[in-house]
Amino acid sequence: MNPATRSTLIFAGIALSGLSLGGIWVAKEAGRVMRQQQTRRALSSPLGVDMAWIPSGKFTMGSNDGQLDERPLHDAKIRGFWLERFEVTNEQFAKFVDATSYITTAEKAPDPSLYPELAPEKRVPGSLVFFAPSQLTNFTDSAQWWSFVEGANWRHPEGPESDLKGRATHPVVHVSWYDAAAYAEWAGKRLPTEAEWEYAARGGLEQNPYPWGRERFPKGLWMMNVWQGNFPGENLAQDGFKGTAPVGSFPPNGYGVHDISGNAWEWVADWYRADYYAHSRHENPPGPEDSLDPEAPGHPKKVARGGSFLSSDTTDKGYRPSARRRISPGSSFSDLGFRCVKDGIAP
Ligand SMILES: [Ca+2]
Image (cartoon, rainbow, N blue to C red; front, side, top):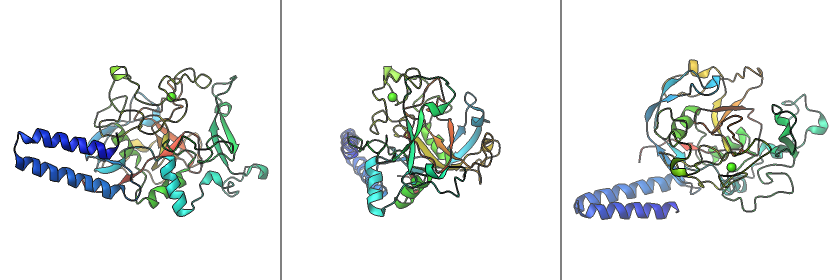
């Protein structure tokens, strides 16, 4: 159902139930809903992007059940903000590129000053694409399922021969952190902080393993696009999707946000520091000033959240609201996209 139709139905429902309560209440409520719709319209300009209001509140960030960098548990107080209900899609990203002639990182040859170790013949535009290996010799070597493909980019997700046919409403992928930030700025928005992202992902629930609650299959339903089968060779797609899915293919969480788990990883604003939670600010934590990946000091990383269609129970469980992934800001992958936030007033 499109948002306008949904709003109309909600309005009709409110108006009908209001008849028994009296005309004044109906008029007041109608005014409120209309103002809300106007706010939403104003916020969605110029892209027509639907946003959810994430109300102010406090939550427990992190998890004791995940990786070490998800600890310690700590309280974070978050001011309300607008969050895009869906991951940024290919058709939305195309509007940005059409308007600005923006060229993404993956479409440019790597800068030798940033990649001095890269041989000159390897300085070609491209991106990292997942391919399921037919035979696997080493389960810890991700190079067996990630290939740098020359000519792979957001328009050509599997390489030069591939295109976006049938994928207009899939999340844009193969975007670097810089590309995501440039889009957000153009749209008059910004990337969420890591704390805002996790707060929104939890949908108002406290320390639940999924954005919608504790059960993986509430009422027997698939709630996210992740990996089923033995990763990375066996992709059973029991959730209906082997790769990315059109955004909104799965139900929203308590804040009305779709695909916050699975489908595509989402860049957030923050630098990655494994130790950040031990001393982060409790009110609107802005993220650390620099990055420290203990496994690769000297290689600054940004954070991505939410997992993707490749997230599996046998690997990263990246779909958990607390899971953190560290990625060089200039990197891009066939399962990494983003969504934006906007500051504003409550509806
Ligand atoms: Ca899937």
